[in-house]
Image 1 (cartoon, helix red, strand yellow):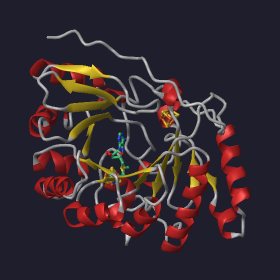
Image 2 (cartoon, helix red, strand yellow):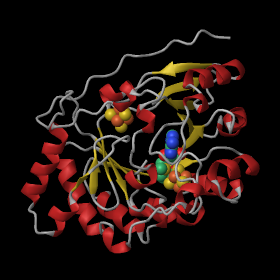
Image 3 (spheres, rainbow, N blue to C red):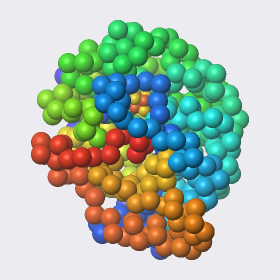
Image 4 (cartoon, rainbow, N blue to C red):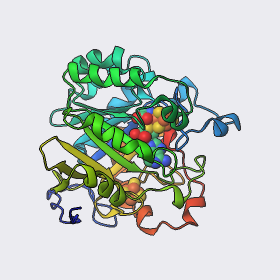
Length: 350
Ligand code: SAM
Ligand code: SF4
Ligand code: SF4
């Protein structure tokens, strides 16, 4: 087996006269959740047991409208945002989502991406591309229906998600990123089959450590398969080498197959925290701003937005929230922090 070097060097952030948080981080990524609803019940995100325990989804009038999202997004861009990811819940459940993408895609120099469970992608890929979407990420945790059902909590054929990935590629949204959340003992046997399927396809498979987002997923450290073990497993069959990051706040560490069959990535939020380069903000579907994925509460912008707040007031509020930010949850995670009452992933936006 090869010796696997850990690459820690990171490019420096671009200098600019933009707000910095208390740890010197600037804003460059905005994730916008357009719905808290989903047609899947992934065990690690929105398990059916939690929904049955009286979880209340937002009403339509509680959601930000596309006009409100566009207005806020424009103000975020002025504060330094370079990448916007549309997420949820399942973002393709939001009616006419292409209309929002079209508006956001008109912002010069801003990359617009979307994360989806892929269940409706086969029908939507062309329209998303036509609206100006730049890139897409599809979540897929296994290739066999039984494991997929176990992970997603629904009886949905894997072949339909694969058809969605093919449709995205055919529509020109390639390379597609494929996100696989790995839970030890649940789908770790699916890692190598996924590697074999996507190697050489032109798409990039990324392995995400199971995280303690929210509380509904009953996270246990013992169910996390460290990404270094994932890399070691893959390397034993298909040798890989590290690739330098493209930008300062890149979440995934990139690796490439030595035989030229493409790249993979690992997102090691649990075992190798990357808070020091975290430039992400999240806007929930009802207009609350979260400065960390593991936050216990957000900052509502909706009232200011709906009660006549000016652009200048909204911008000052956003900058103030960012300047007070001191989040570094993954660096200080313990078994005790896992039990905090944190906001659920499908609400805050993954
Ligand atoms: N529904 C869409 C989807 O599944 O792609 C978008 C929203 S989902 C919350 C965004 C991403 O978060 C998905 O790739 C999902 O696998 C990931 N995710 C959700 N819960 C997670 C957890 N506990 N640990 C790691 N990743 C998680
Ligand atoms: Fe739905 Fe995505 Fe959460 Fe799965 S990870 S339950 S698909 S929002
Ligand atoms: Fe960013 Fe919070 Fe994750 Fe750290 S724990 S990387 S601050 S979202």
